[in-house]
Image (cartoon, each protein chain N blue to C red):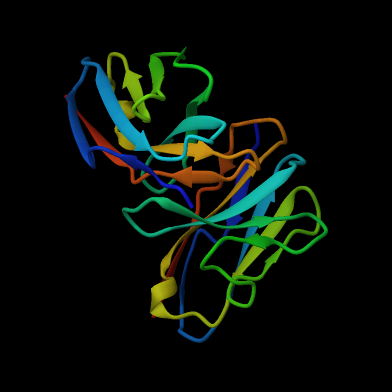
Length: 111
Length: 114
């Protein structure tokens, strides 16, 4: 099937700074794009989603941007905290609710 | 929201044997899925567990190797059959309700085949 990939495998961020995690996708037919956070030893946790007909959506300290022209998805985390250290995956959801995950970005927050 | 419990959380198995992983959801859900995740890698969908009918498998996964049951709306099992070291991985189940985009995941089962 189609794949969703991330630009960088790792990201090191100073505590308090903003983080930007990027993802490129290839399947323009996906209904939703979703960001997940996975901490060590745990399953992925839903962060935020964006419907394919939107270009921006904000949550608590997070913003997801969707650029359909260049098939690019990003997750912005404001005022990054130590608890934000994790692996972040972008995923696309088809109309049958199946998820196709990208490769993941490991975010490390420096104190 | 849904809380998902997976058992066992980890196991070390001999090659040639089979392991059944259980996934219990604390509420009725429409859809349940099984994923595999190699350590340090992304998640790959194995199959959709259909309640009352045979599971739907993704390319590269077959029922003989990964039989799946889903007897009701809160429970599913995945069996890894005739295991080899290449089956060493983390297996995760997820659940979500129809019309919802948020999928909930279990903590995973870390399987090591020796």
